[in-house]
Image (cartoon, rainbow, N blue to C red; front, side, top):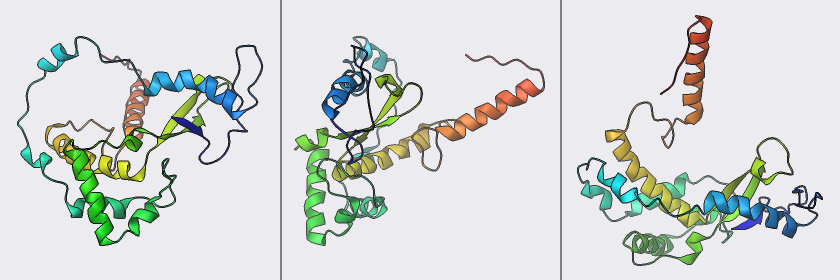
Length: 212
């Protein structure tokens, strides 16, 4: 990851150094932030008992339609739906540029996405992202109080959107109503609001609350 302030320099960020002084340059800030973001985005390999855990999960019916070739209508849908004026990835190609592509160029892009889907290609650029850091709370000189947002290339975002839409069909069929994350038109904030209301109602009636 490279470090960025959303296309702005990190002059307003001053991380605390081990000698008690504050960082004065982007390089110093990046050196201090790197261990923190490496731990978050480049986690350790999966546990040794992962295969055993997967064997305990009931096999669902296979849905071959999820493996169908990517269609031009899918590509066009997510190009059209991409938000304008959003920070692009390292290629600096924004959504507005993709929306201006000719039909022939879209056919080429569709071929690239399909090759990736089939395992025929894996562009190195798709594994790169620009990291924007946002202060969450607490001491601004402590790197653990900053949250990282990865700015991916727009073509990767389109590929992710296509795969996500197909996986949502499985959630619609096998998911539970109480799942709020990774759901369209709802989010974890909705779930938190419901939970907070339930807790306040319990407290109002003098009832205790326990979780399992």
